[in-house]
Length: 373
Image 1 (cartoon, one colour):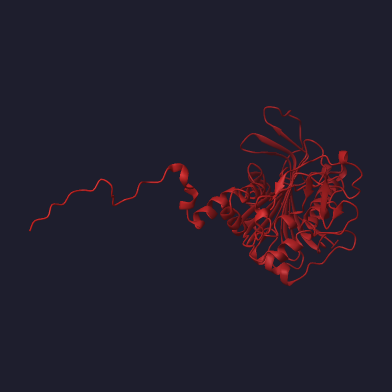
Image 2 (image 1 turned 180 degrees about the horizontal axis):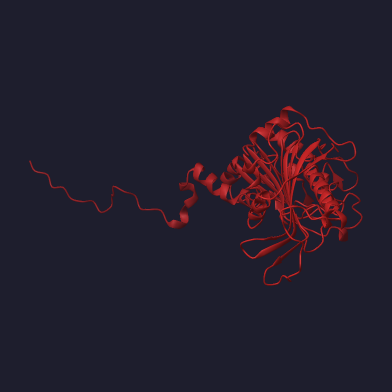
């Protein structure tokens, strides 16, 4: 008996491929890859927008490990009028994923008022919720259709943050145009170290006027003490330390609630100051409560040892000229670490100011001390 095999045009081994419009290509990506994409996004506002795309995105965003919160606006304590709110920001937060409707209404406003009261207004930006009367309830301020949230609220549903960056809209220190003032501080439960770089003016070689300056032999000239130069540097130092300690004080709740943090950086859009904490310093704050200043809402600054370097004029390789360039390195008096440790002095500032710090570090050093305040 013989059999004849013929192909059946109506039966196929492989089904017809689906139309490209019938399935979502993102469904083919594993969760781990989507999380890597969200890590690159980082900005909490954009992550909030991702939350409303799909249920899957909404369930994954809370596990992002790298988060950036940009604070564009502040709300003043007196809250006298809408016109007083000079800045306005839209930011997004992550809602509780238990509600489906919530996943499609995850956009919130994150608003902060102008820092016209240095250091004190920061308490509203980063502090916990507070009970208020009228239209302001539990830390939320409702103005028509706008709801304002603090960074603490915005971050409350992120469960795996390892690197958190918070950026304020401006630096706290009101300095005159042309003056350079930058600081960087590391904190644990108290100040670990601080670097301050300042200059009375910053010009370029093409625009600078060749003025006769005193002979620079590496020593601080006598005029530095008589024309108010030293007094000005002391003001810069104290102001920078107050700004750093105020920022540190207001991070307590965020640090307590996010135990997965490996690093936290609080900076400002002006590039004026940077507060940084690594994993060991974060854990130290959780274990050892900070000592608060009795005068204001900031961390108590301990007694300090300081080293100061000064140059009447500092010419940088890129053509920048710093007049009255000053570098101050600070550590607590009780610290066993050397104040003049080049390992942390050399990379404290971005270029060209990192080079300025290295050049100043080679000059003669002057020792100062400061009591706790």
